[in-house]
Every structure is written in C-alpha cells, then in structure tokens.
Image (cartoon, rainbow, N blue to C red; front, side, top):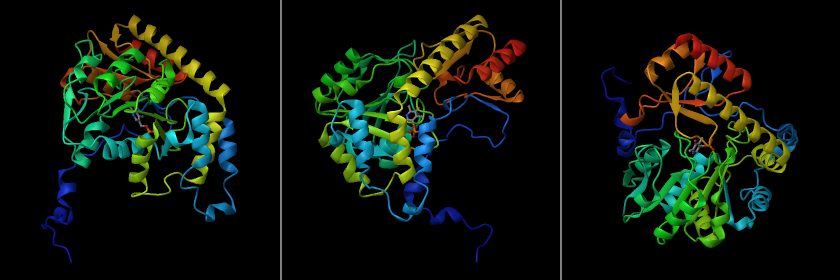
Amino acid sequence: MSSSNADLTRFWSHKVHELSPYVPGEQPKLNNLVKLNTNENPFPPSPKVLAAMEAQLGDTLRLYPDPNATELRQCLAGYAGLSADQVFVGNGSDEVLAHAFQALLQHDQALLFPDISYSFYPVYCGLYGIEKDEVPLAKDLTINVADYQSPNGGVILANPNAPTGELLGLTAIRQLLTANPDRVVVIDEAYIDFGGQSAIELVPAFDNLLVIQTLSKSRSLAGLRVGFAFGQHHLIEALERVKNSFNSYPLSREAQAGAIAAIEDEDYFQHTCQANIAQRDKLALQLQALGFSMTQSYANFLFVTHAHMAAKDIALLLRKRGIIVRHLTSSPRITNYLRISVGSSSECDTLVLALKALL
Ligand SMILES: *Cc1c(COP(=O)(O)O)cnc(C)c1O
C-alpha cells in the first residue's frame, strides 16, 4: 500500500538525502546530431580492439574474469616503464578516482583542488565525507602550484585541467610533490595524450604520486569503461584494498582483452592523437577568426568565450541546428564560456558554418 502524499524519500538513508550527484553531459538518443559535448573521440576504436573483444564472446563468458587483470596490468606496466604491482585498473577512471578518494584522500584535513576543474571531485567529497578546499584558479584560468602548499589532506589536479585544457609541466608537478611530502598528490591525466607530458616518469622518484589515466578519450573507448592508475606499490595496495572490499571483478573479459589490444596498437593511437591535435589547432584558429577567445587547450576540447554573444545563447542556437556543446555553470567565472569537443573534420566544418550564420 502507498498513499499519494506519503514522503517516499523516507526510505532513503541520511547519506542519500545529502548527496548531490554528478550530472553527466547529455547523451541524446537522436542520431544525426553533431555531438560535441562530452569529449568523446571522433575516430573509431582500433579495429584490433574489436577483434580482441569478439574473441572473448564464447563459452568462457560462463567464467569470472581474472579479478587481478594480470595480463592487462603487465601490458600497462610495459607501456609505462613500471612493474605490474605499480598499476591499478578499474571500470573507467571515474571508478579509479572514487577508490583513490576513499583510499588515499580521505583524511582529517581538507582536500585541495581547483575551484574550476572536473566536477566529479566535489561529488566524491560528498559521497565519502571528505572536507574540501577549492583553490581559485588564477585570473587567466591557469593553476599556480604555489597555491597548493597550505596544510591539507591531499591534492588532486586534472592535467590538462578540465574544462580549461590548460597544461602544467613536470617542473610544476615536481614542485607540488615536493611541497606535500606527507600527502598524496593525484594527477588525473584523462587528456594527457593530446600534447602534454605525463607525470608517470616521476612515479619512481615520488612515493606520494598517483597518476590516473583512461582509455575513454585518447583511445576512443568511452563505452568500454577502462581506467587505470600508476603509483608506487604502497599506493596501489591501498586502492586494491578498497576495490576488493567493493567489487572483485570490475573489468569484464571483453574489457580486459580490448584494453590490451588498445595499448598494443601504438601506431593507431599515435595517428589518431596527432589527427585530433591538428583538428583542434585548426578549429581554434577558425573560432578566433569568428571573434572567440579561449584558454590554451592541450586537450581534445576548446574552452571559448565570445566578445559579443552570450555563451548560453550560442549554445541554445547551436542546439536548434542539431549541434550540442557544453555550457557549464558550476562557477560564476565560467558561465560565459562554452566547452566544445573537437569532433571529426566534417563535424567541425558544420560547427564553424553554423557559428558563421548565427553570429
Ligand atoms: C572524462 C574524464 C574522466 C573520466 O573518464 P572515464 O575513464 O570515462 O571514467 C576523468 N577525469 C576527467 C578530468 C575527465 O574529463
């Protein structure tokens, strides 16, 4: 029995009442939209990934996958120049991040991250009861690492940052690690393959560094859900303790096989990354010619603002023409910006033509 005016949320836990969940970019069901709102890669995954996954679709699906993803971790270790016990894998880097928050960033002092960054960070703080201190970006929307030296419970930065695309070099990362010797510094490198230098090479020198990457962006595999972390073994062990208290089998057989094939197909990876970078730089020039200014993006998106037209209006007008971009409103400082994913060359042409018409 239920009565219409009863408060059905009375079944919820206190925790659930308090949560403010992440809102992902729209995934519309319509087919012929130009979808430039969630930073998906316009290139298909490597054909070798599809072949490797198909090979898994048989009788062995009866059996659980390798809970330790041994072969995949060895493959990633080879890629990173580390050992397999310095690698952790999870169901998308969002899951790896979630485990890192719980395993390594939940301390008595506040976690530091930029006020404008990946909006999942404050959500995990809410889920795990972690106090946060959101450090303002500089006026030009860049990160100044000297701002991350106050007493803290840990530091997490996206590098390149999202949604600005701005990149920190390894000298700055090293400075951050040295300034926080007793706290874990997490570098979320979801976009590092589009022109940045990974902090993986600092792992052997710093016992407080965890680097997180994903197959979702640069390997065109957002639908596969594979992310990973690199760090010294004591950090990986903390992640494994959480994972094995939550879900021992996060990666399916197909995901493990597909991920290995993706990492092994280095030629395809290099080729598609270079093509994305070239397309990004071309689109940046075209948008500048239309009166947009932008941050310096090292990612597969541009973060743009127009001198004469409000971001909100541009987003609405583009939407009417079947083009979706992301208008983020998480901070008042960025409400006049749009984040536009770098699409295929024909998608970018469609975008530029539409902007020409409406500006
Ligand atoms: C896309 C993105 C992720 C999440 O990637 P998944 O591996 O698909 O979960 C993590 N961090 C940042 C900054 C991202 O933009």
